[in-house]
Image (cartoon, rainbow, N blue to C red):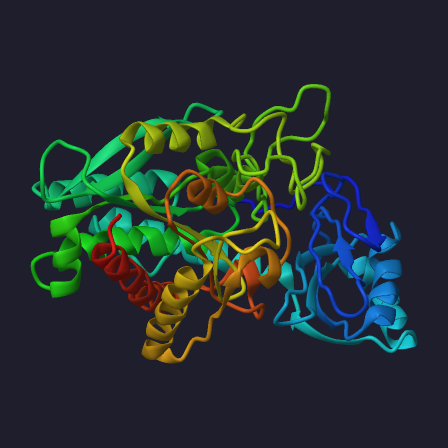
Amino acid sequence: MAIRYNQRLDRFLSFGPVMSGRVGLGFICQLKADHYLLLFSFSPPPPSRDQVFRINVRNGDEISKLSQLVNSDNFKLDVWKAPSTFSCLVDVLVPSVSLRPVKSFLKSQGLEYSVTIGDLQALLDHEDEEMQHNEGQERSGDNFNYGAYHSLEAIYHEMDSIAGDFPDLASRVKIGHSFENRSMYVLKFGTAEGGRRPAVWLNAGIHSREWISVATAIWTARKVASDYGKDPTITSILEKMDIFLLPVANPDGYVYTQTQNRLWRKTRSINPGSRCVGTDPNRNWNASFAGEGASDNPCSEIYHGPHANSEVEVKSVVDFIQEHGNFKCFIDLHSYSQLLMYPYGYTVKKAPDADELDKVARRAAKALASLSGTTYQVGPTCTTVYPASGSSVDWAYDNGIKYAFTFELRDTGHYGFLLPANQIIPTAEETWLGLKTIMEHVRDNLY
């Protein structure tokens, strides 16, 4: 399996106030006196020994200096992680041909940095080798290794296995299809037939390069099924509510990350009149659509699409949830940064239920940390990381699903999107404690 980057398409950088609807891959760090950093980037082609730098920007002057660097077409940089309220550290992928001039620039401008990934291609190659080795073992042993990353086909097969192993509790339900006509499946967990019981929606893989979210979701599916009747908490939750779990919300993008471009983020839909493919499916929901933190440029990583729900993957979820009509909780799993957030993303305005959501999120983060000490920051999306209009969680909240949360899973940047497979189960196990805490609260506070 050849892992590639997509060709770099464009790059812009602006230093100043945020302009709604006019951003590329834009992320914001407010430091002093309305200074903002907007970083716009697209994945570069893969020269050997690309590296990821972590750059520390401490004030407006340093933001301006970093702006010069990222704005230069000479360096071909790709921003992986933007600053947030909790950390003004910027993770930047630097092509090997730019290493020397970038280091020279950072030194001359007094910008502190460290190298978090010394050889990106080596990391990609190792990940690929591990996947191929695991696939061979699974074919010979006919078992599913939850401590490995998997193809879409293998994940769908495991969903069938879970439904077959627990026929009185779990069923696989087709909710739609992708742009490239791949089926979209959810696992439904419930103890009562028929009706529209209160329900929880768990979403993963909407951004296709975030593999740990998919791996965590399929582990969670098996955990829900196997612990029912043994764990009093999940048993009581399922006695009162159903759980719907969508492990791969962007199947076309996920397949593309395993065949062409490991760092692909968007869908694979065609944009008429543009050479650029795909829409950011987490800017495509009808929640202040095309507002702040999304782009009208089809080449942007956060392109919002031509209209709300233009992506068939998004519309499939929207239609299913609206037809069901009794969802009480919506949780979207992402990576990376170790954050637990709630609405709003599209405005700094405080959500009506923000106080309750904050308390629930903090309890969940505490439960998560109790297993291995992994620390999560908590807060509303817009002020915790950056403005983001058209997100799934904001749509859910605006449509009456009060308990709406976003998890940004491990890590904080040492591996970034390339979290090693040996961290899958530890990540899933700790995330499960956070998820259970949220679902317990929903169970006890149905509305």
